[in-house]
Length: 285
Image 1 (spheres, one colour):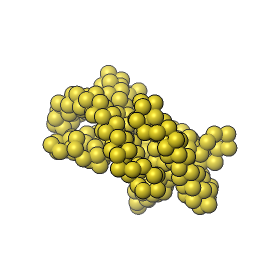
Image 2: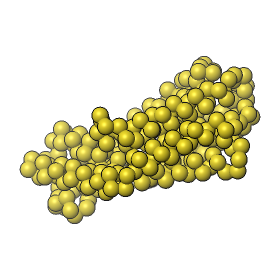
Image 3: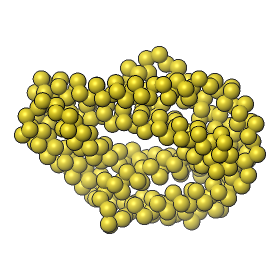
Image 4: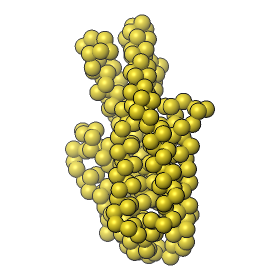
């Protein structure tokens, strides 16, 4: 039986809310790092909110939707930074593209990052908007959130696993980056949920959480490579057809290497059926 979920859940939500408030207007770190941390906390909060019910109407749903909207609004800026990191990685493995072009490419990527920082973060006062929203959420949380019963928590865990399992059954999933990304989002939710519960029943939830952590990181790397490749094909970056083909081959090679590490872990995870997973969850609760 999982004990003390309610109190710990509110503490976990308060902790993540405080992190968002801090990073939303932190002055001592780069905006790229701050946005990365804010988006991580958004995802963790949304996953944990699935264990909650509203004392009034659609409160939980509205909070989750607003966090999702915030995340979408800053995703282009986040991706522009990830593209720079991927480019640095590509540069280190000798892509056979003239050095001057690689330098020019990085300059354009960095300029794009600066443009999006000004456009999506600074001009729109996004940090202030997020901070104010999260401060209101923090104040209203005790009165408006009702931690669901154990049966509801169990159902949410089963739903998270089953929805991920169903996506993985698609035979073409490894050929469609967007489906892999959708799988990652589902598994990330399950990861945050099992990570929260591992302190209540470590024997089951800790190894599951550790397993999901590795898998979602590998799927995240695949998506980063896919986004980079899509961006690099745009004409404003100045690469010719041959150079784009060289980069594409390098990216696809990295994706294959990553896939070779990730596939066995996913097969192991989903060697268990949703029915078997549900039985184990029932035994715990």
